[in-house]
Length: 191
Image 1 (tube, rainbow, N blue to C red):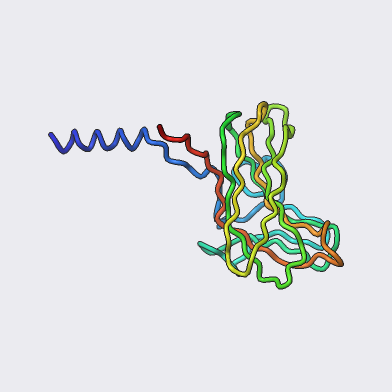
Image 2: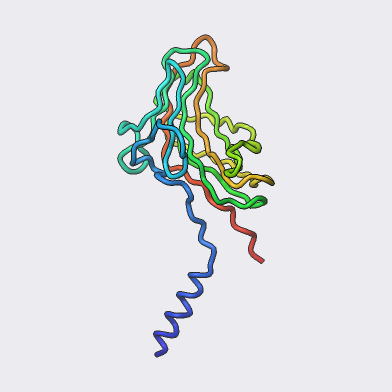
């Protein structure tokens, strides 16, 4: 009987503790990204301009069997990236968008942009966005993270990782692999 009571207390304490859950679906890119338009909930959507590519790759995964490779091939003024919508958020709460990136390109002649676009699902419109985080990937996987509070009027986060050649000279060129993304509630400080 004591063992059952002890198990019950342990279960209740674990059930009521605040475990931060990763809200990203396919966080390690083991399933193919899509290019087919809305809805953007539950999968990664790839996007790219001319001279650029975005797709799953088995070349440089950090974990699992795949990552996503984003490439620009000697093309100025273009872009490539992935995004996913995460619904059901409450304004005023803080979340962290984090992941890992690496580049086999040396030199890497392109820019990286990480951002959260805050959206309203009812109106299907953008409410605001974070300033772009512009981390520089290295030859080894390195982490990036961006923390922000959900603004008033927003209930969905569109998390975006992109590369671009708008600010490179003379041409944009290079590849970046990304893997192991997360979007997690920032826990309240404990008393």
